[in-house]
Amino acid sequence: MSHPLEGKVALVAGATRGAGRGIAVELGAAGATVYVTGRSTRARRSEYDRPETIEDTADLVTEAGGHGIAVPADHLDPAQVRALVDRIEREQGRLDVLVNDIWGGEKLFAWDSPLWEHDLDDGLRLLRLAIDTHAITSHHALPLLLRRPGGLVVEMTDGTAEYNRDNYRNSFFYDLAKTAVVRMAFALGHELGGRGATAVALTPGWMRSEMMLDVFEVREDNWRDALDRVPHFAISETPRYVGRAVAALAADPDVARFNGQSLSSGQLARVYGFTDLDGSRPDAWRYLPEVQDAGKPADTTGYR
Image (tube, rainbow, N blue to C red; front, side):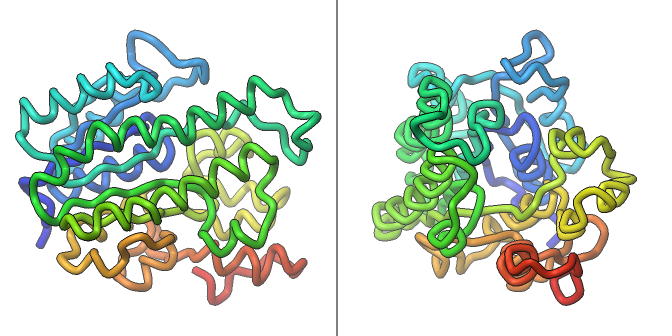
């Protein structure tokens, strides 16, 4: 089916850029109506002060074949989230897919800085943005999602449960945030599974987000120029790759088999057969421990 999600309604919370935008666009390409939220609008930028906006994302969803609807929202504000869900209920009468991709912490953690040296205010705000936002959004959105059987909740994080269990992730605050989101999906799986819905944690691999491309001073069309400086960047993927993972999950009538599990874009590409935009299937969460972390030279043979 070219539009397996036609008639379905999705909320991608945190869809301004990166994985959230990629997910929203791919849900649109599958025919869904997609509400996209964030704090960066054409009228006002968030503290990131970047050019991407939720209106741009909504336009991309519509261009892809869906119906994109941009709604400004600060997901730390329960009243705003409640109003958002009330609007979805009023306009659509249903919610089939909830993607919690709210983050906003890139500028708030210091790499390899121990807890006692880390700025405390930054660390605590990071936790609020990464954890409280997801809990607030699920609290208000799940009653609507549960009205029909087959609903899907996707908790977006960085790293699989296995990888995060065995590896220190950059800083105390970052490590805690990304591990907590995996556990959120596990807990929601227990609470939703018996009520006809499914919850999963999902991680992209090394993603070529707008911000990452800027860090490496490349564009999507010449990203391989960064490999001279960062050879292992060869395993990277576009945000649309994890978007295709979400679209595949949302269209799977047997998605409940994954309830409560930690999944990755590369893993699901093998299950569902989708590819990244270039036709490859990068599997970063096999590559990282087996090649990069093992100290081997960059070589993606067998990993994409």
